[in-house]
Image (cartoon, rainbow, N blue to C red; front, side, top):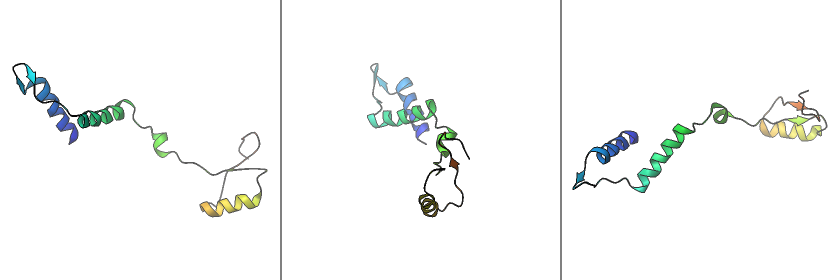
Length: 90
């Protein structure tokens, strides 16, 4: 709906609402801010990875088992990835 309105506003500025060679339809700062949001969404769209990125709880071989079990209970996990000191999955 807003895009249609902005298109009509652009047409009025470019082709109409002129009197003595002067424009009488001028976009407000609010309209310019809204157009900027559309421009940003088109020029830099959100990626699928960023949209669905999820932090995964993990632990290391040398982490105390008690701490890991508490975290698993708090998060409701039944399995967690375990890494060694070199950040290799075990």
